[in-house]
Length: 95
Image (cartoon, rainbow, N blue to C red):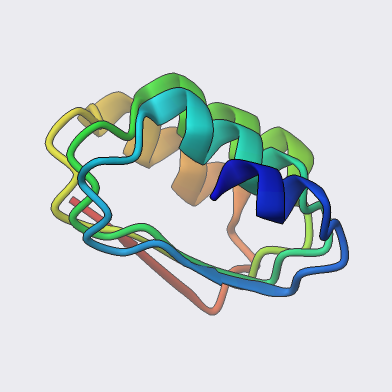
């Protein structure tokens, strides 16, 4: 899956919600290789880490929708960081 996304950097929307078998590194590589992302749904992905969310914030400045709800590995601290970073975001759903 990551290789397909890496070959498509013009992707605007990515929905990998409930893909619990995807390792964190694959999710990070997929999301950060698409700088034009405006919508990212990765709800219920049990292995999404704080580091992945921080990298997404750095590499996806146009993100207008982010759903990272029900991702148990995400800390409250990184949620606050993302709310600050993406204050312009229309919809940000975190734990």
